[in-house]
Length: 212
Image (cartoon, rainbow, N blue to C red; front, side, top):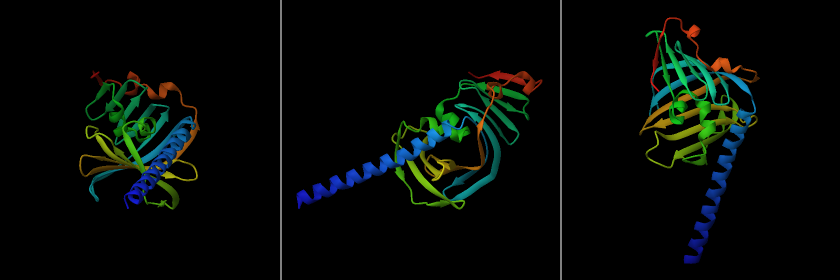
């Protein structure tokens, strides 16, 4: 009996290992596909949830990306990131905040940034969802290995045929979720580096606050 239990545990462990590697391979292919697209543009919708209940009003926006660089517009606020420095223009306050954000801070702003740092600090497994917006998908769930990480859980919906990211959901804390749904996606664009760098002509007269 002991030998049978030992064998069952070994087979179970091997099966879980294979599933974990397969889930990670989906993420690797999604990341590779994204990085091969060159410059991209996408539109998105952000929703907040407490458990299953949606809170607040959905936010729509658009983003341009090239590698780690991006330019984001949402609710009248524009954010530029050149790979190191981030500028955020808030018209209501007539100010531009300059910062040097961490990867986790960037993830809260740019969902595609997750495709650059998911390999550290997470375990992987497949979920059960097979369809999203009428498309065949992989659902991949990631769990943080450390309680100190701000993002505790991530769920990604990835289109099977193209390995394109369709939706990403984050859990922070016990029951607070954010979902980001990609509404449209265009790749293969040639975007100049200047697209991702703020200049004073982008916000004439605004106060620039250096928070670095």
